Image (cartoon, rainbow, N blue to C red; front, side, top):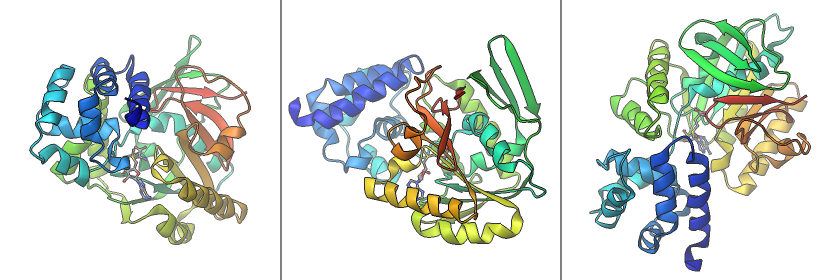
Length: 330
Ligand SMILES: C[S@@+](CC[C@H](N)C(=O)[O-])C[C@H]1O[C@@H](n2cnc3c(N)ncnc32)[C@H](O)[C@@H]1O
């Protein structure tokens, strides 16, 4: 088992994230973490393709029932004729979760403060661009017996802790653009079926929210640029200047960059913010942008919030990875 140390750790950690959210994925991840034959099967894949989310989605894409037993997954992987492996190699985890907007909106509102102009949004790692429409949802933040609602459209509910600066209004968006290595089209049924497959098995509410988000975006598809965020971002920020106050944002994206690229991205964003070209809203796991995370001090996150929300490099909150909760720092 020592041979598979990193993989065992990766799957055990994923089981921890899935606990309480998807009993099926928790059981599958624990199953893989203790199964030498399946771990050996996974080692044929490139490191970035060994992620539980991708492997499980590919298995479901080829008919493995979920919710379903670990035995079903195991059988399918070990007997794979190449179809599951080909899907893993051809596709990637592009989970596009608009629920995250409920945690990003207070940061957008701070960035928009005192602006006479609308926001010009640039999302790096946009997937299908579903998060580029913060102005098309109703938000409901609740906690401590209180509730604040704002906006109209499909509802995004979020449990909160701490002094969340609930915005007085949903910011106006004048322009929306995104960058992705593989932009997905909301008008392509294959792409939207894959996005649905990426939603965890028992989470029918998330699947329903995804369908509504696809409708929102399909009514006015965003401008999506294909390419690496490090290459494409400076020109897009330049282009955005004509359309309003520029906000570059990302969630669950920088984790896919190698450590040296994460450093380059942090330096790029720090430089753009310092030059006044844009604001920067980041929402990533705690270990992903250590410079941002360090500014949170040693506060313990509440409400299962494992992401850090940053504005211009400064941590403002911890957030739940799918946007279900927000712990604002005092
Ligand atoms: C998990 S998805 C998150 C999508 C979206 N940000 C959200 O929160 O719903 C990560 C996205 O980042 C994209 N991505 C990863 N590395 C990238 C890179 N170097 N340049 C551009 N996009 C990248 C992937 O293709 C994928 O669509």
